[in-house]
Image 1: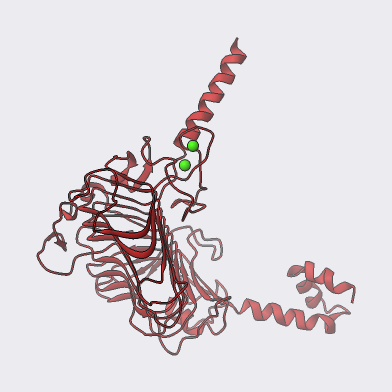
Image 2: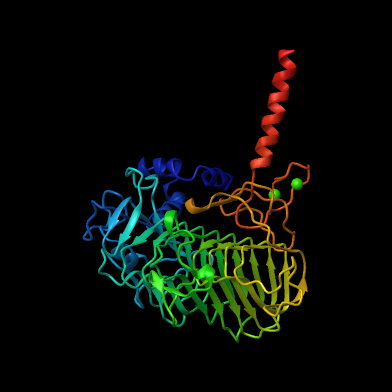
Amino acid sequence: MKSLPIIGRCIGLFVCVLAATGGAAEGQLTPIVADLEESSKKSFYVTPAGNDSNNGQTVAKAFRTIQKAVNAASKAGTVIYVAPGTYKETVTLGSGVKSGSPAKPIAIVGDVKGVETGWSPGEVIIDGQGSRQYGIQLGGPDHWTFTNLRITGQTVANVYTTASDVSGITLDDCTFDVTTSWGLYFANCGNVAVTDCVFNRTAKSGHATYLYQTSGDTMIVAGNRMSLKGKEYLSTGFRQGRLWYNGGSFTSASYCYGIIAMAYNTATPMKITVQNNVISDAYLGVYVYNYGDKKSSTMTVSHNTSVGCYYGMYVYSDSKTTATITNNITGDCYLGAYVYSPLGTLDGHLAYNLTYNPCKADTWKGCAYVSVAKLGTVVLQQTPEFADAAGGDFSLTGTVGIDAGVPLGATSADVMGTRRPVDGDGDGNAVVDIGAFESTEQEAKTLRIIKWEEVGVDEE
Ligand SMILES: [Ca+2]
Ligand SMILES: [Ca+2]
């Protein structure tokens, strides 16, 4: 029995060698070998050189289509590694496809670094070629995660579901080339998480995310970037109060939103988290809505940077939801924020260059379009300086907004995944910045000054 812990620590090669040489302890080792075989079956491989008549269990026997691997995945915890390359298909998770479990989702991982497949690094692209409606269509199975995929060339939505019970879906580190209708379209779904994704939009793109949960208890939209780039940045006219549809002014409905994160769940309390997102040029940059009327529901809408929109931020909740709306930037907008939340707190907010601003002064107190239980520090009409807004870099480089946030709703990392808070104004006290980016500029300057002074001393 004493040997068991040692085998446990040597898992892998040691066990395999003993088994191959038919060692004396073979009988004892058999169950462990069986376990290893079992776990190896939990990986499938898809490569551009694969073939769907293979078993998909090794790179040499890889599948050619992601769909084939999806159909083959039979166990919770299965990982499907997809080699760099282009996959011209719609990946459909229909009713015959297995679900993962909350602790062990089934994962499709774009092997962009080539570590698992041995392929040269590159993007893993699901390409609709301008003719397929969807990149991924979800129709039943729960608890699937999608990582490091680029989904492009679809005609309706990059990812789509209208099934009523799809839950436990995570999209992480993916890139979506948003169609003229939707990037993500999730109607009537359960728990969804969209994290660290890039939504490439143009002035003709539709909604980046349309998420509407009617079940589950958690919705997360965090660390996503969806601002327009180059000459299209601040080009759409939303910020002057003009509606805009597919690249032109429009007088009726159908204009793009950035983030739509809505829940109408009367069965269970919801926890909605919308943080560290970067949006520009949308009708509603950040639209968060909870109306299940369940006690202990929470909404945290913090550290978003939303510019060039008709409404930078539109947050609405029932009277039982505790909403934390803090550390957001809404600027170059028609109206900075419309907030209605009877139990809500609005604090550490920065708004500037508002076309419509009946409050005039540097506070929103008394403004009809902000109705919350607690109104804290709200800075209006101080214009922050961004590093390269048209390039998507909204790092603060001046003084406005740096170390100006509040602890409530603060995140421990910014949209780039780097730490918060950083002492950005060099006063020795690290405080979070307002917006999606945490500035490290002043800290870097301070370090340079110290080094220069040290050099100066040495030279004397
Ligand atoms: Ca700071
Ligand atoms: Ca400071």
